[in-house]
Each structure stands twice: as structure tokens, then as C-alpha cells.
Length: 169
Image (cartoon, rainbow, N blue to C red; front, side, top):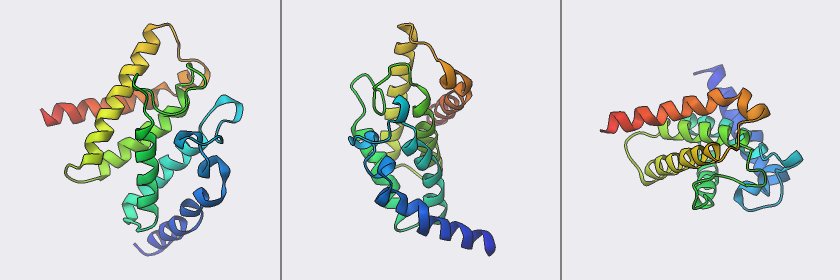
């Protein structure tokens, strides 16, 4: 409360909620079908933004930011492939840019009390995504470069959802 709460409200009402209005990497992101957010073949601007915006929106229950992040979450889940892959698929070896999105989904799932259609959808989507990752690894598409260096992010998310499934049973 006090200073910290004022700062988080300021952050939520300033750049975090306005970035999607003017920065093409977020506003016209390839994660939602646009043609931005693909510098060097990576698609990481939206995942990084979402990974920070989700906890901020949920902690504050912000009436502007929360619907915005939910629109992005729903849009990303709407575009999941039949294989289970999340996000643009311009490089089959790009596992990395999915990690921050998965972490944002973990945070949304964890912070949302009770059950909801979106929580169930997130669970189904990440389990399908983990299956797609497994299939690609089985095909010999290895974790390379940054995907390998940050594999612990993905492993932590897998453990989180395994715990969710274990607790639900």
C-alpha cells in the first residue's frame, strides 16, 4: 500500500496500458495475426509485455489493463494451431519466444480464483502446447541458443501445470 500501490497504479495507467495503442510491435503483433514483432525471426516483444502486464493487471484488478491483457490472451489462444503450437511459427526451432507467454498464462491461471472458462482454456492450451514441444523435440528440432539457456522457464511452467492437474485429481 502507499507508495508502492501508487507506483503500480501509475505504471498500469501509463506505459503498460498504452503501449498496445502506439507501439507496432505490440499493437500489430504477429501473435494476433499482424505483421510486426518479428525482428530477427523472433517474436518476443508481445510475450515480454504480456508477462509483465498480466500480473500488474491482476494485482490491481485494473479496469483498463485487465480487459486488454485478456483480449491478448484470448487472441493468442484463438490462434493456437491444431498441432498445439502457440504464436507465429516462422522458425520451428524458436521455442524461446513462447516461454514468456507461457509464464504469463501461468500467472493468469494462478491469480484467478476459482474456475472459469478462460482458466480451463489456458490449461487445455498449455497442455496441447507441451505436446507440440514434445513432438518437435522427438522430430529432432532441438532447443538451440536462448531456448536452451532459458529451458528452466519452460520446465518450471510444466511443473506448475502438472501440480494443477495433480491437485485437481
